[in-house]
Length: 190
Image (spheres, rainbow, N blue to C red):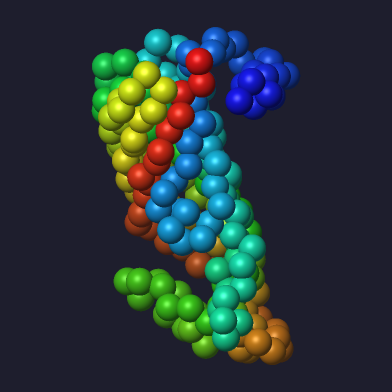
């Protein structure tokens, strides 16, 4: 644990962000974990009511029948806490971006309706706003929930089927809706 704390402090020292040990946490989004997406986040204090949340998410798996949900995602978020940082209600503004290689799956709500029969590969970028709440469980542990709404713009190459790969063309897709959903387990570094 001491080496992890030293590594995180060194990382923020190199980026020029002042911090003390009570102002850093590490977290994992349990919703991403449930979708087999490896993720790790950190949150640092910037001011008495402001924090910066940084998360990285990665899924490299190909499932049975060549179903793909491969992607990586980076999502920084500035947060304003209504009472005190790392406790209670907060509002945030986030950016997001990454790359994807999806195919052979069915997404909810009719998103990418032909994804079951085709494969899409490309990149995306977007921004949104969020609301969340954090519950203190002990001196070092917390649980947080948050939801974000915003806009995503995606570029893609479309391929004939999931397993073969004849290129069918490229295109763009715009999305307005949920851009963040989290139930996070948090460890506060002291």
